[in-house]
Length: 205
Ligand code: TZP
Ligand code: MG
Image (cartoon, rainbow, N blue to C red; front, side, top):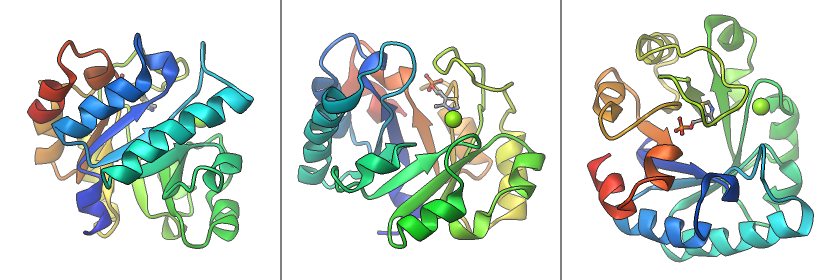
């Protein structure tokens, strides 16, 4: 399957986003039909060191068993131990060219929030882009201003060949808008992790 299709329903999550066992949430999200998962153990309340690795291994195994893409957020040290399919970074993280030389064959994803970031990024070495925040979000402490779905159109126009997912404030209610302007997928944290019925939320997405 093409990467653009595998990124269609993309859950991002760490234990700090969960009020119950992250593995249970991931299992339900897989049952609901996510196609990709990003292990983003980051920010206030997140696990570190051995505990982070141990949780990553549990979640990795679930993804392997169900053939869901497993991407690790911004932690190149975990890519090999977790046998991740790839790594996702933001603008303030490791440079993507450096990442590409470290991981010639892994999937590399990069977040881009505006034209300046896009122009300053080595888009040619990455496999997909994450554009956002689409809408207001309180999940990421240092999230930038919402850019809206226009940003999806703009990135698709400039880089029609690269798989693109929307991120930030995406819900069951607005995911359609993001897809309709040309995104290949939607990624979400809260819309899935905080859903009363995770299976149903993923299906509705
Ligand atoms: N990057 C930009 S916004 C965001 C990240 C990781 C948080 C998205 O979380 P939510 O709960 O889906 O708005
Ligand atoms: Mg960052």
